[in-house]
Image 1 (cartoon, helix red, strand yellow):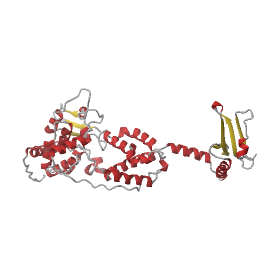
Image 2 (image 1 turned 135 degrees about the horizontal axis):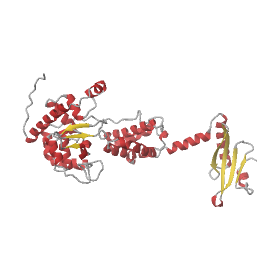
Image 3 (image 1 turned 60 degrees about the vertical axis):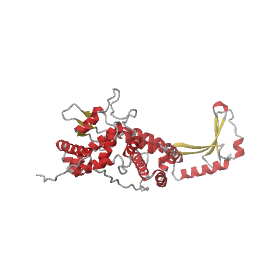
Image 4 (image 1 turned 60 degrees about the horizontal axis):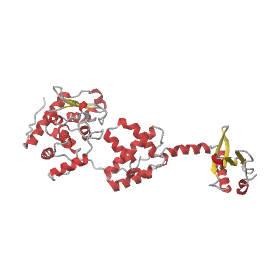
Length: 403
Protein backbone atom coordinates (compact mmCIF):
# COMPACT_ATOMS: atom_id res chain seq x y z
CA UNK A 1 0.00 0.00 0.00
CA UNK A 2 1.17 3.50 -0.79
CA UNK A 3 0.40 5.76 2.12
CA UNK A 4 -1.68 8.59 0.73
CA UNK A 5 -4.08 10.88 2.53
CA UNK A 6 -7.02 8.91 1.17
CA UNK A 7 -5.47 5.53 2.07
CA UNK A 8 -4.72 6.37 5.69
CA UNK A 9 -8.13 7.98 6.17
CA UNK A 10 -9.67 4.61 5.34
CA UNK A 11 -7.53 2.62 7.80
CA UNK A 12 -9.20 0.99 10.80
CA UNK A 13 -7.90 -0.96 13.79
CA UNK A 14 -9.63 -4.15 12.65
CA UNK A 15 -10.31 -5.12 16.28
CA UNK A 16 -6.79 -4.29 17.46
CA UNK A 17 -5.70 -1.53 19.82
CA UNK A 18 -2.52 -0.67 17.90
CA UNK A 19 -1.80 -1.03 14.19
CA UNK A 20 1.15 0.10 12.02
CA UNK A 21 1.04 0.06 8.23
CA UNK A 22 4.24 0.64 6.20
CA UNK A 23 4.55 2.21 2.79
CA UNK A 24 5.43 -0.09 -0.13
CA UNK A 25 7.37 2.59 -2.02
CA UNK A 26 9.44 4.01 0.89
CA UNK A 27 10.60 1.29 3.32
CA UNK A 28 10.59 2.57 6.89
CA UNK A 29 7.84 5.12 6.27
CA UNK A 30 4.68 4.14 8.11
CA UNK A 31 1.39 5.19 9.65
CA UNK A 32 0.32 4.22 13.14
CA UNK A 33 -3.24 3.99 14.38
CA UNK A 34 -3.90 3.24 18.08
CA UNK A 35 -6.60 3.43 20.68
CA UNK A 36 -5.92 6.12 23.31
CA UNK A 37 -7.40 6.67 26.76
CA UNK A 38 -11.04 7.70 26.55
CA UNK A 39 -11.56 5.76 23.32
CA UNK A 40 -9.98 8.34 21.01
CA UNK A 41 -7.86 7.29 18.03
CA UNK A 42 -4.25 8.39 17.82
CA UNK A 43 -2.87 8.89 14.28
CA UNK A 44 0.87 9.39 13.71
CA UNK A 45 3.35 9.17 10.84
CA UNK A 46 6.46 7.07 11.45
CA UNK A 47 10.02 6.93 10.16
CA UNK A 48 11.48 3.66 11.46
CA UNK A 49 15.01 2.29 11.03
CA UNK A 50 17.71 0.23 12.76
CA UNK A 51 20.93 1.61 14.20
CA UNK A 52 23.53 -0.79 15.63
CA UNK A 53 20.84 -3.47 15.83
CA UNK A 54 18.37 -1.31 17.78
CA UNK A 55 15.09 -0.12 16.31
CA UNK A 56 14.68 3.67 16.25
CA UNK A 57 11.48 5.50 15.55
CA UNK A 58 10.65 9.15 14.86
CA UNK A 59 7.00 10.22 14.81
CA UNK A 60 4.89 13.19 13.69
CA UNK A 61 1.27 13.92 14.44
CA UNK A 62 -1.01 13.19 11.46
CA UNK A 63 -3.09 16.19 12.52
CA UNK A 64 -0.10 18.44 11.85
CA UNK A 65 1.33 16.90 8.66
CA UNK A 66 -0.39 15.62 5.54
CA UNK A 67 0.73 12.49 3.68
CA UNK A 68 3.06 14.23 1.21
CA UNK A 69 4.65 16.40 3.89
CA UNK A 70 5.21 13.35 6.08
CA UNK A 71 6.73 11.45 3.14
CA UNK A 72 9.19 14.27 2.46
CA UNK A 73 10.21 14.40 6.15
CA UNK A 74 10.60 10.62 6.25
CA UNK A 75 12.85 10.70 3.15
CA UNK A 76 15.10 13.23 4.88
CA UNK A 77 15.31 11.11 8.02
CA UNK A 78 15.92 7.84 6.17
CA UNK A 79 18.46 9.54 3.93
CA UNK A 80 20.47 10.57 6.98
CA UNK A 81 20.27 6.97 8.21
CA UNK A 82 21.68 5.78 4.87
CA UNK A 83 24.88 7.79 5.45
CA UNK A 84 25.33 6.44 8.98
CA UNK A 85 23.61 9.04 11.13
CA UNK A 86 21.19 8.39 13.98
CA UNK A 87 18.47 11.08 13.72
CA UNK A 88 16.44 9.76 16.68
CA UNK A 89 19.44 10.05 18.99
CA UNK A 90 20.15 13.53 17.65
CA UNK A 91 16.54 14.44 18.29
CA UNK A 92 16.77 13.23 21.90
CA UNK A 93 20.00 15.15 22.37
CA UNK A 94 18.29 18.26 21.06
CA UNK A 95 15.42 17.78 23.50
CA UNK A 96 17.91 17.37 26.33
CA UNK A 97 19.78 20.50 25.28
CA UNK A 98 16.55 22.45 24.93
CA UNK A 99 15.81 21.63 28.57
CA UNK A 100 19.13 23.26 29.58
CA UNK A 101 17.87 26.81 29.37
CA UNK A 102 19.73 29.73 30.86
CA UNK A 103 16.95 30.19 33.41
CA UNK A 104 17.01 26.57 34.62
CA UNK A 105 20.79 26.35 34.85
CA UNK A 106 21.19 29.71 36.54
CA UNK A 107 19.09 28.24 39.35
CA UNK A 108 21.52 25.31 39.59
CA UNK A 109 24.50 27.68 39.45
CA UNK A 110 23.19 29.87 42.27
CA UNK A 111 22.47 26.83 44.43
CA UNK A 112 26.02 25.57 43.90
CA UNK A 113 27.69 28.94 44.41
CA UNK A 114 25.75 30.36 47.37
CA UNK A 115 28.05 28.80 50.01
CA UNK A 116 31.14 30.24 48.28
CA UNK A 117 29.97 33.81 47.68
CA UNK A 118 29.79 36.66 50.15
CA UNK A 119 26.12 37.34 50.96
CA UNK A 120 26.03 40.71 49.24
CA UNK A 121 27.86 39.35 46.18
CA UNK A 122 25.36 36.50 45.98
CA UNK A 123 22.46 38.96 46.03
CA UNK A 124 24.00 41.02 43.22
CA UNK A 125 24.88 38.01 41.04
CA UNK A 126 21.35 36.66 41.52
CA UNK A 127 19.88 39.97 40.43
CA UNK A 128 22.00 40.22 37.28
CA UNK A 129 21.27 36.63 36.22
CA UNK A 130 17.55 36.45 37.03
CA UNK A 131 16.12 39.96 36.67
CA UNK A 132 14.60 40.26 33.15
CA UNK A 133 15.99 43.80 32.86
CA UNK A 134 19.44 42.37 32.25
CA UNK A 135 19.46 39.10 30.29
CA UNK A 136 15.69 38.55 30.13
CA UNK A 137 15.53 37.71 26.37
CA UNK A 138 18.14 34.98 26.88
CA UNK A 139 16.61 33.24 29.90
CA UNK A 140 14.39 30.88 27.89
CA UNK A 141 17.13 30.02 25.36
CA UNK A 142 19.04 26.71 25.58
CA UNK A 143 22.66 27.33 26.58
CA UNK A 144 24.10 26.02 23.33
CA UNK A 145 22.00 28.45 21.28
CA UNK A 146 23.21 31.58 23.08
CA UNK A 147 25.72 33.22 20.78
CA UNK A 148 28.22 36.05 21.08
CA UNK A 149 25.87 38.44 19.28
CA UNK A 150 23.08 37.66 21.77
CA UNK A 151 25.30 38.49 24.74
CA UNK A 152 26.82 41.56 23.09
CA UNK A 153 23.44 43.05 22.19
CA UNK A 154 22.21 42.67 25.76
CA UNK A 155 25.35 44.25 27.24
CA UNK A 156 24.99 47.21 24.90
CA UNK A 157 21.34 47.58 25.93
CA UNK A 158 22.17 47.37 29.65
CA UNK A 159 24.89 50.00 29.23
CA UNK A 160 22.46 52.26 27.41
CA UNK A 161 19.76 51.91 30.06
CA UNK A 162 21.79 51.59 33.29
CA UNK A 163 25.30 52.79 32.52
CA UNK A 164 28.66 51.17 31.87
CA UNK A 165 29.45 50.09 35.46
CA UNK A 166 26.18 48.13 35.73
CA UNK A 167 26.68 46.59 32.28
CA UNK A 168 30.23 45.55 33.20
CA UNK A 169 29.07 43.91 36.44
CA UNK A 170 26.21 42.13 34.66
CA UNK A 171 28.64 40.86 32.03
CA UNK A 172 30.96 39.65 34.79
CA UNK A 173 28.15 37.63 36.38
CA UNK A 174 27.33 35.99 33.02
CA UNK A 175 31.01 35.23 32.34
CA UNK A 176 31.25 33.51 35.72
CA UNK A 177 28.07 31.52 35.04
CA UNK A 178 29.25 30.21 31.67
CA UNK A 179 32.69 29.34 33.09
CA UNK A 180 30.89 27.20 35.68
CA UNK A 181 28.61 25.71 32.99
CA UNK A 182 31.66 24.65 30.95
CA UNK A 183 33.27 23.00 33.97
CA UNK A 184 30.01 21.14 34.62
CA UNK A 185 29.81 19.93 31.02
CA UNK A 186 26.65 21.93 30.36
CA UNK A 187 28.21 24.19 27.73
CA UNK A 188 31.08 23.74 25.31
CA UNK A 189 31.93 27.43 24.93
CA UNK A 190 31.60 30.74 26.75
CA UNK A 191 29.67 33.12 24.47
CA UNK A 192 30.80 36.07 26.59
CA UNK A 193 34.39 35.74 25.37
CA UNK A 194 35.11 38.54 22.94
CA UNK A 195 31.89 40.39 23.75
CA UNK A 196 31.86 44.12 24.32
CA UNK A 197 33.16 45.00 27.78
CA UNK A 198 31.95 48.49 28.73
CA UNK A 199 34.85 50.63 29.93
CA UNK A 200 34.71 51.75 33.54
CA UNK A 201 37.12 54.35 34.76
CA UNK A 202 39.15 53.28 37.78
CA UNK A 203 38.21 55.43 40.73
CA UNK A 204 41.00 57.51 42.23
CA UNK A 205 38.95 59.65 44.63
CA UNK A 206 40.77 60.24 47.91
CA UNK A 207 39.09 62.31 50.59
CA UNK A 208 41.26 64.96 52.16
CA UNK A 209 41.80 65.09 55.91
CA UNK A 210 39.29 67.93 56.16
CA UNK A 211 36.73 65.93 54.15
CA UNK A 212 37.21 62.86 56.36
CA UNK A 213 36.59 65.03 59.42
CA UNK A 214 33.44 66.49 57.84
CA UNK A 215 32.11 63.01 57.00
CA UNK A 216 32.86 61.84 60.55
CA UNK A 217 30.99 64.75 62.14
CA UNK A 218 28.03 64.32 59.74
CA UNK A 219 27.54 60.66 60.74
CA UNK A 220 24.48 60.05 62.85
CA UNK A 221 24.20 57.83 65.90
CA UNK A 222 22.66 55.02 63.84
CA UNK A 223 23.83 51.89 62.04
CA UNK A 224 24.99 53.69 58.91
CA UNK A 225 26.83 56.34 60.90
CA UNK A 226 28.63 53.76 63.02
CA UNK A 227 29.57 51.72 59.95
CA UNK A 228 31.04 54.74 58.17
CA UNK A 229 33.12 55.63 61.23
CA UNK A 230 34.40 52.05 61.51
CA UNK A 231 35.34 52.11 57.83
CA UNK A 232 37.35 55.26 58.47
CA UNK A 233 39.05 53.65 61.47
CA UNK A 234 39.83 50.28 59.88
CA UNK A 235 39.90 50.73 56.10
CA UNK A 236 37.75 47.61 55.62
CA UNK A 237 35.27 46.93 52.83
CA UNK A 238 31.78 48.17 53.49
CA UNK A 239 30.12 44.74 53.56
CA UNK A 240 32.82 43.37 55.84
CA UNK A 241 31.73 45.92 58.44
CA UNK A 242 28.05 45.93 57.45
CA UNK A 243 27.77 42.19 58.15
CA UNK A 244 30.04 42.03 61.20
CA UNK A 245 28.75 39.76 63.98
CA UNK A 246 29.40 39.56 67.71
CA UNK A 247 31.15 36.13 67.52
CA UNK A 248 33.78 37.74 65.27
CA UNK A 249 34.73 40.15 68.03
CA UNK A 250 37.05 39.52 70.96
CA UNK A 251 36.17 42.39 73.28
CA UNK A 252 37.26 40.87 76.59
CA UNK A 253 40.90 40.41 75.69
CA UNK A 254 43.51 42.90 76.98
CA UNK A 255 43.97 43.69 73.28
CA UNK A 256 40.47 43.61 71.73
CA UNK A 257 40.30 42.51 68.11
CA UNK A 258 38.00 41.70 65.21
CA UNK A 259 38.53 38.62 63.04
CA UNK A 260 36.94 38.60 59.59
CA UNK A 261 36.25 34.90 58.91
CA UNK A 262 37.52 33.38 55.67
CA UNK A 263 33.92 32.75 54.57
CA UNK A 264 33.35 36.51 54.37
CA UNK A 265 36.81 37.49 53.17
CA UNK A 266 37.29 38.40 49.52
CA UNK A 267 40.50 36.39 49.28
CA UNK A 268 39.17 33.47 51.33
CA UNK A 269 41.54 34.05 54.25
CA UNK A 270 40.64 34.95 57.81
CA UNK A 271 41.92 38.40 58.77
CA UNK A 272 42.41 39.81 62.27
CA UNK A 273 42.68 43.50 63.12
CA UNK A 274 43.27 44.98 66.59
CA UNK A 275 40.59 47.39 67.76
CA UNK A 276 41.96 50.73 68.85
CA UNK A 277 39.98 52.78 71.42
CA UNK A 278 37.96 54.78 68.85
CA UNK A 279 36.84 51.70 66.91
CA UNK A 280 36.24 49.80 70.16
CA UNK A 281 34.05 52.61 71.52
CA UNK A 282 31.94 52.62 68.35
CA UNK A 283 31.37 48.86 68.57
CA UNK A 284 30.54 49.03 72.27
CA UNK A 285 27.92 51.69 71.52
CA UNK A 286 25.93 49.25 69.34
CA UNK A 287 22.84 47.93 71.17
CA UNK A 288 23.05 44.16 71.39
CA UNK A 289 19.94 42.20 70.41
CA UNK A 290 19.32 38.92 72.21
CA UNK A 291 18.04 37.11 69.12
CA UNK A 292 20.56 38.49 66.61
CA UNK A 293 24.33 38.02 66.24
CA UNK A 294 24.74 40.70 63.58
CA UNK A 295 25.60 44.16 64.86
CA UNK A 296 23.92 46.10 62.08
CA UNK A 297 20.63 45.85 60.20
CA UNK A 298 17.36 44.52 61.50
CA UNK A 299 15.85 42.01 59.11
CA UNK A 300 18.30 41.10 56.37
CA UNK A 301 20.27 37.95 57.16
CA UNK A 302 23.40 39.46 55.64
CA UNK A 303 23.59 42.50 57.87
CA UNK A 304 23.10 46.16 57.02
CA UNK A 305 21.26 46.69 53.73
CA UNK A 306 20.06 50.30 53.64
CA UNK A 307 23.18 51.64 51.91
CA UNK A 308 21.44 54.00 49.43
CA UNK A 309 19.20 55.50 52.10
CA UNK A 310 22.07 55.88 54.59
CA UNK A 311 24.39 57.51 52.05
CA UNK A 312 21.63 59.88 50.86
CA UNK A 313 20.96 60.99 54.44
CA UNK A 314 24.68 61.47 55.08
CA UNK A 315 25.10 63.54 51.91
CA UNK A 316 22.17 65.68 52.97
CA UNK A 317 23.90 66.41 56.28
CA UNK A 318 27.12 67.25 54.46
CA UNK A 319 25.22 69.77 52.35
CA UNK A 320 27.73 69.74 49.46
CA UNK A 321 30.69 70.53 51.75
CA UNK A 322 32.43 67.39 50.47
CA UNK A 323 32.99 66.68 46.78
CA UNK A 324 31.06 63.66 45.40
CA UNK A 325 32.27 60.38 46.85
CA UNK A 326 31.18 56.79 47.34
CA UNK A 327 31.60 54.61 50.41
CA UNK A 328 34.43 52.55 48.89
CA UNK A 329 36.46 55.75 48.46
CA UNK A 330 36.97 55.67 52.24
CA UNK A 331 39.08 52.53 51.91
CA UNK A 332 41.36 54.23 49.37
CA UNK A 333 41.46 57.33 51.54
CA UNK A 334 42.53 55.34 54.62
CA UNK A 335 45.29 53.59 52.66
CA UNK A 336 46.53 56.90 51.25
CA UNK A 337 46.29 58.61 54.62
CA UNK A 338 48.33 55.87 56.30
CA UNK A 339 51.00 56.16 53.62
CA UNK A 340 51.10 59.92 54.17
CA UNK A 341 51.83 59.52 57.87
CA UNK A 342 54.63 57.03 57.29
CA UNK A 343 53.03 53.55 57.49
CA UNK A 344 55.00 51.10 55.34
CA UNK A 345 53.28 49.94 52.13
CA UNK A 346 53.40 46.25 53.06
CA UNK A 347 51.72 46.98 56.40
CA UNK A 348 49.01 48.97 54.65
CA UNK A 349 48.46 46.00 52.32
CA UNK A 350 48.21 43.71 55.31
CA UNK A 351 45.67 45.96 57.06
CA UNK A 352 43.59 46.07 53.86
CA UNK A 353 43.89 42.26 53.57
CA UNK A 354 45.21 42.57 50.04
CA UNK A 355 46.60 39.36 48.55
CA UNK A 356 49.12 41.20 46.37
CA UNK A 357 52.57 42.72 46.42
CA UNK A 358 54.64 41.18 49.23
CA UNK A 359 51.94 38.56 49.92
CA UNK A 360 51.60 37.22 46.38
CA UNK A 361 53.57 34.60 44.49
CA UNK A 362 56.64 32.98 46.01
CA UNK A 363 57.10 35.78 48.54
CA UNK A 364 53.64 35.12 49.96
CA UNK A 365 54.34 31.41 50.22
CA UNK A 366 57.46 31.86 52.34
CA UNK A 367 56.56 35.00 54.30
CA UNK A 368 53.75 33.93 56.64
CA UNK A 369 54.11 36.75 59.18
CA UNK A 370 50.87 38.29 60.44
CA UNK A 371 52.67 41.56 61.27
CA UNK A 372 50.65 41.80 64.48
CA UNK A 373 52.92 44.31 66.21
CA UNK A 374 53.36 46.47 63.11
CA UNK A 375 49.64 46.39 62.38
CA UNK A 376 48.79 47.52 65.89
CA UNK A 377 51.35 50.31 65.72
CA UNK A 378 50.04 51.46 62.33
CA UNK A 379 46.39 51.53 63.44
CA UNK A 380 47.34 53.37 66.63
CA UNK A 381 49.22 55.92 64.53
CA UNK A 382 46.24 56.26 62.17
CA UNK A 383 43.82 56.68 65.08
CA UNK A 384 46.03 59.39 66.56
CA UNK A 385 45.96 61.13 63.18
CA UNK A 386 42.15 60.77 63.02
CA UNK A 387 41.74 62.29 66.47
CA UNK A 388 43.70 65.32 65.33
CA UNK A 389 41.64 65.65 62.15
CA UNK A 390 38.34 65.31 64.00
CA UNK A 391 39.41 67.82 66.62
CA UNK A 392 40.18 70.28 63.84
CA UNK A 393 43.92 70.40 64.33
CA UNK A 394 46.79 69.67 62.01
CA UNK A 395 49.11 66.81 62.79
CA UNK A 396 52.73 67.46 61.92
CA UNK A 397 54.49 64.43 60.48
CA UNK A 398 58.24 64.50 60.98
CA UNK A 399 60.14 62.17 58.60
CA UNK A 400 62.71 59.97 60.23
CA UNK A 401 65.34 57.57 59.01
CA UNK A 402 64.82 53.93 59.75
CA UNK A 403 67.68 52.11 61.40
